[in-house]
Amino acid sequence: MSKLLVTGSSGLIGSEVVEYFCRLGWEVHGVDNNMRAEFFGPGGDTRWNQRRLLAAHKNFRHHELDIRDRAHVDELVSSLKPGLLVHAAAQPSHDLAAARPFDDFDVNAMGTLNLLEAARRRIPGVVFAHMSTNKVYGDRPNAIKLKELPRRWDYNDPAYANGITEDFPIDQSKHSIFGASKVAGDVMVQEYGRYFGMKTCCLRGGCLTGPNHSGVELHGFLSYLIKCNVEGRPYKVFGYKGKQVRDNIHSYDVARFIHAFYEKPRYGAVYNIGGGRANSVSIIEAFDRAASLSGKKMNFEYVDQNRAGDHICYISDLSKMKEHYPGWDITKTLDDIFREIYGVFAGKTAATREGKPSRQKVQDQPKKKGKSKTDSKTRTLPSRIKT
Image (cartoon, rainbow, N blue to C red; front, side):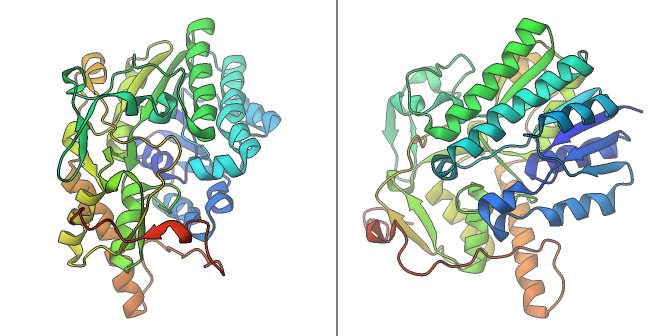
């Protein structure tokens, strides 16, 4: 029986990978210590997902382990000797990284190195797939000539008609502390492929999303946005008139690509994995889509200051992925993604009203007393931006 070890197995991508390979009959082992709850509070808790996976799949085993624990990571890799290792664990927030830089770097860079070195020493023939991020490009995508359309920003340079390719520069730009730690992990994964001849790939994700995302304000764009719409919460828009664009890929399509890479691995490969132009959406366009599903107008606030290192427009060029793996393509449309995420939160809300247990227990983060740091700069979206 083929064997998989996946880190961050209770998170969005990790849990999708668990389910995908469990359905194929693999022996699947997951590593997760619910650090997301520590990072983001109760709203980021993923224990519900861990319990769901254990109940649904007899061929899945959970391991409570912190990837910063080098000795125990080495011990687990040595004992399991998986043929595929998917590294999806991460600290994913720009804001939290700035507040807790040591924790951020220890998880994103050192945790990755711990896994790579354990794999090199114990299972050098393993296929190692690393979930990186488009934030390795820093804010350099903002230097691309843009045009402002009524409801979104877009590229105004024909060279980027299909989006950003993998040879886009990562140097000399503001990455955010999170982006910098992910660069370190990304480059190390490449180097273990090129220097040690390991079968590795870095998947530089656009907006990774899906119904199993425990979205919070600091991370989880569509999940958190749709949650706010369904529950009537205010959603904060940070700068760029709400026209900033993201391309969104369903976690299922990410899992499918990992499988394709496993079957035909390369050494030190890099891919921009996102939804491409067809699955791109701006924040205010996403407001419209959420409202069309729920019948509720979006409740939002506008903050003038954009987040440091944030992208104005980011669309992944999927050409390299499709060239190397012609059997892979996007199967989940933007409409599919919105419907699936909406279904989770709408079902949770209805179950709460009826006093029934919901599929996902989504807890609110406790409200802080007093003004937040952004209160003085918070206002409604400028009247010239219509929703």
